[in-house]
Image (cartoon, rainbow, N blue to C red; front, side, top):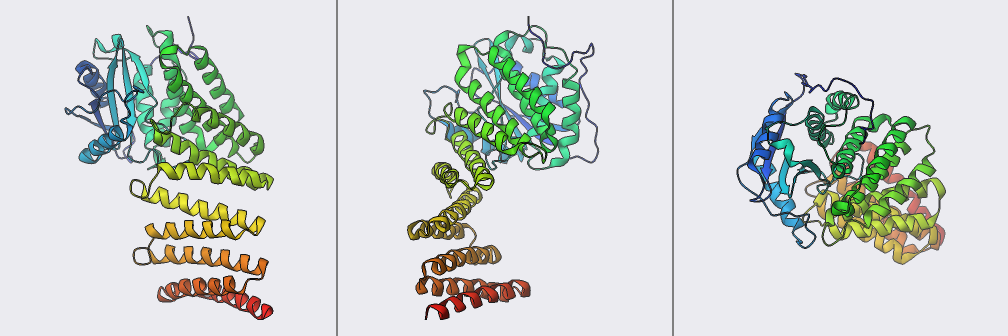
Amino acid sequence: MFCWPFTKNKKNEQTQIQNNELRPLKVVVVGSDSNSALPAKETIFNILKQYILFSVVLEKEQTLENFLNLNNKNFFDFWDSGLKILKQHQADVLIRIYQEKNSIRLNFQTDQMYQTNEPPFFSLLESLYLPISYFTQNNLPPQISNLIAATLIALNLKKDFSYQAPLEKLINILSKNKIPEGIEQNFIPHLLVFLSLNYISAKSDHFGKKDVKLILNLTSFAYKNLKNEYDSLAEGALLTTLGQTYQCAALNPKADSFSLIERAIESYKKALKHFSRYIFPYDYGRLSLVLSALYFQFFQLSEDSQTLRDSVFYLREAEKIFTSAGFPELWAKIEHNLGTYLSLLSARSNNIEIAQLAIQNFKNEQYIFTKQTNPEKWADIEIQIANIYYYLGKKISNKRFLETAINHYSYAYEIFDLLKQNKRTIEIETYIQKADEEIMRLN
């Protein structure tokens, strides 16, 4: 016998979220294989129709086979087929349903879920397993219904943070519920992962010590209930959840940021071992992005050059996954951050080779933000390239670098002059004057 980790309450009410100001989220429900039980799809469809905040579509077309089978390296196809369905229906969230032995598995997908390294984050690999017996009467326990509803809302927070209020309402209801009846021990870790992620989503902007303690209790309880059948991915999800917990807590101004970032890094590095770069590339890439950002925060706190090198290493790993063709804006952000971090490394070591790598990364970013399509952004990048040449030329007394800096400042000046941004042109004139003074000093 086990207990729901929140406070028990006699009432298990299913909520009706009423908020006329919020647009109903469009949800598509689809089966992932020919063995996906039709009653399970219909049950989820009928349950979600009871929530005012959802507009639900039942997709008849079936998608790929079980992509969690590690012998099937079809993650890219699975991801792309989901994007196709989302685009076809102009939907916010896709729910895939798949039958595995005596359980029904739910996976959730949005078109933007791998585009950010900011918590909260739900992975496409995080699976909600439920007993198949729940679906025999075309109904679900209210705790499970509300958990699914909360997940759909949490997944949409990246697009619109105004959905946080109904999410908090659902979390408050879930916190007063008892454990669902008739559920076996091996389902508990997956339920708790989703419960934890939804809680983090609801509280992410005001995460405190009590919230950290609660999530630690949830994840600890989940670990105790892990079974061999789904251990690797479930443990990876739990470790990712822990990482997000510490990461959110570190944002609190009163928190011990150094210690919390250190714990977040430790949790994410352990989680990374469960997501193969070749089988589950996007999770590997996203965790690499998060680790890079956390190591950079570490560098800002400690001024330790090794943490800056670690940040560059994980960005390079993410760069291998998120390509310019598949994720142009994210790729551009990676290139920008690489340029920034490498320029800092170059400045600390006066290393010309590292500086040239940084400049190349900034030039890579300009493939996405071109002079024609985004002139202001392009010009900003020109200034960053010029700054690298200027500071390096000044430090090592290299006239050629200083002259190159002036050229790049001038390219940026032309753009801001055309855009009639006088403040920016005056700023660039100051940069050019300083570079000229350094050249005169060398002469």
